[in-house]
Image (cartoon, rainbow, N blue to C red; front, side, top):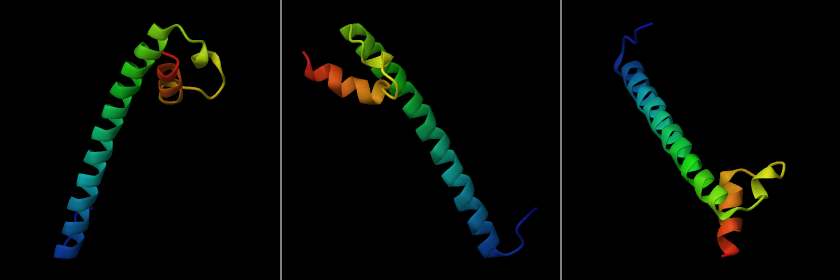
Length: 66
């Protein structure tokens, strides 16, 4: 469906920009989680074995123990 008026075209453009922003954020979050996971595993902590603890939760906690 192609928008026919300026309002519809603007909405479509903004929606496409927002989707592109979300895709970039998802990619950055995925890369950050991978890096955090490597750092947390390097500390030798068992935090990641706990239910509900991922790289974002285990990273700060593992860093405090140093």
